[in-house]
Length: 234
Image 1 (cartoon, one colour):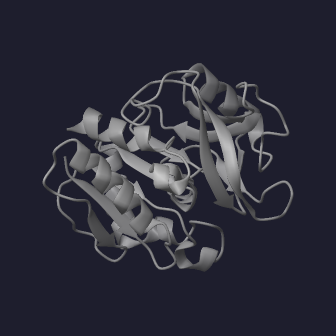
Image 2: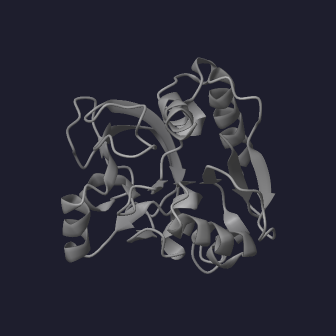
Image 3: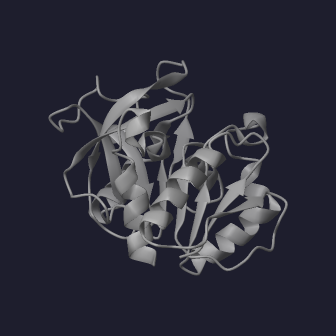
């Protein structure tokens, strides 16, 4: 398996993702590691997975992810995504994917109008495609969030389409798996924490699985995402 991580000015979770993904690849016996691709590089090697990491690309000017969506590397990412190459966007990466039109909806300011940084619980809504391959449908996991603009919104008709097509990947929930307002850190519509494209080849999620992918970090509920990706794409 070969993977690329796109690095923008202001990315701050690119190394974290690289460590989590490289560890998963090593556990699977891979001899190579993910490559880091600078945002100005429109031409990079053929890969099986592309990751857009968290951070504050271009300082979040205009809107979070708006400028990054038009970078040279993202034009190539969009082309490959439309050709079926899996793309994972985490936090700011999710924002970039919506700004680039690769995922539906928008990420607005948190309902509290405050930056939120804490561990939340997520319910895995569907075990479809490579991204949730390592989880069970309905499983509740602990994953950190750290964002100011994670309030997912789409119109009523769009939300109904997402529900009908199984495009909602994760929702914020409590320990019992119930979808409550108290468990929702940002006011996201229908407690949405992550969504797929229709083909399930692109995933955007606000929480950071790479930040809890090793027991030394206080938990490993994020590890199955990376292990599952490597298994599904190798």
